[in-house]
Picture 1 (tube, one colour):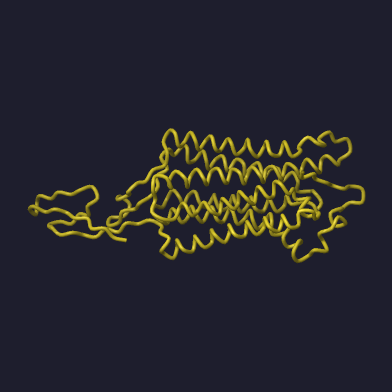
Picture 2 (picture 1 turned 120 degrees about the vertical axis):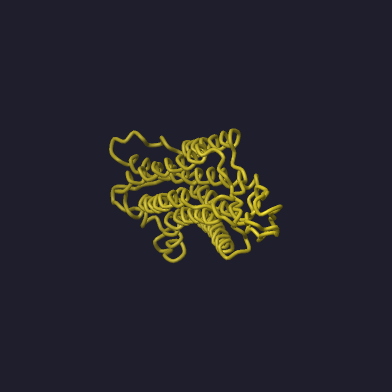
Length: 317
């Protein structure tokens, strides 16, 4: 996409320029300057859009599988309510990259950062709730345990809502104080105007990322505590793998994000969101879907009892 930006030359030694003009010495004719942003019409934008929509479709498909098989042992043991809420939050996460593609506006700039922050906080809160349920359920079966019934559905909803509300409050303060805005960056490339979303408050942006990282660390810690649970029941190891993918993606993202500009920065941010969401979707839900669809014989109560004297049961209602 091009725009005609002119310079006005009176004499070789007297030149006047507007802020968005392209300079050219001793010239009185117009130059073309490229306007750059990640568009839906270019290959990179199309590819990211397709991958984003595929993830959303896979999330909804997984929800439908869980709904259809909700009375089976595998689904009951995986905490049906939190699993469906996690899948819904992943569905929203996969839609977030769509706000990063296209010409930025004030509204899309505010939406992309806040939607990303809140939806990922909801994801991490659900994963945290699932890991706490697993740990509590296992500890409740131990002799002399006093944790039985201490983390039921009400407590699960409370932790998910409270953790997400904290992120929502951070985003609200960010929007009310110094929100993201559109910016025409003419200093990065000489003949290119980069239409980008400035973060506004850098503190707000890094607080949003930092809070998501904190929730991810808590999820990883709780999953680590559950590492010795029986294999047929334990989904903590899959949560651990998904958190490792999450850490790898975002640790790589930060230096790339701060060292680039233009549509490549947007593409990197979008890729980080998609890679994290796909990591959660595949590592947490693919093993369950594999058993349900391809190994239905394992989807029985007998296979959920892994010790002759220890039966673990999670009430998901």
